[in-house]
Image 1 (cartoon, rainbow, N blue to C red):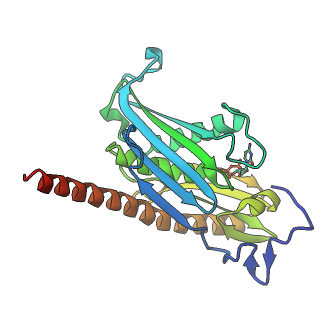
Image 2 (image 1 turned 45 degrees about the horizontal axis):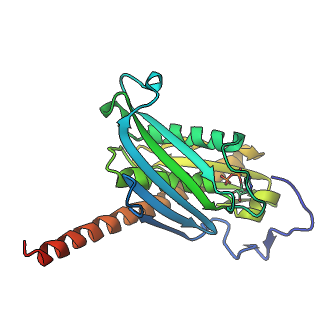
Length: 252
Ligand code: CDP
């Protein structure tokens, strides 16, 4: 968040990339893209490119980190060195540790962790290309990867940010909007229970603006939830088709 008078984020009622105030960038999700993971999903969201992979549930190591009555959901958010214009120094930093923690906590709200005592469910989020909104993209992809891994969950978490640019509440901030806007509010939402499982705010909003921003983000999360479900449906139907073709070839 910052201000730069030289950059016009809104012109003739439209944003720099031509979007309406409540319009998402384009989102595509593909489930089941990695052979060696138990579950996976690849997401493109505007210029963001994010891979999520799930391993587990498996026995938690080190053992002192085990929970006797439930599984631990351990998300690790990582940005590739080449994902941003200035090379990102490899390895964890304060920002990635913070994002890993809040994604883990958001996912724990939907996973039936009590089914797998003493286990860990590892969720790897690899940001290959970043352009604002990667925590929301990472969480959205991760929950599809968990479902792809067959982990029992109450619902898929969908996530999206809203915020404020030039005094206007807008949805899904792009890179310049994130850099030069006035507020950014990432939201994680569980549609079935109408619960918020992630909420942060960078910048300032009035109470009315906050309400408007939340409504916008929640509506968008419902739309994203549809895209997530479609990705899983597509994955499942392809798998069934492949199985049928294999059966036919083998004369089963
Ligand atoms: O990605 P998200 O909006 O969730 O998190 P952020 O901390 O608000 O970062 C916004 C954007 O800044 C990222 O999406 C990247 O495009 C960029 N960034 C960067 O260029 N270099 C970093 N080390 C971290 C973030």
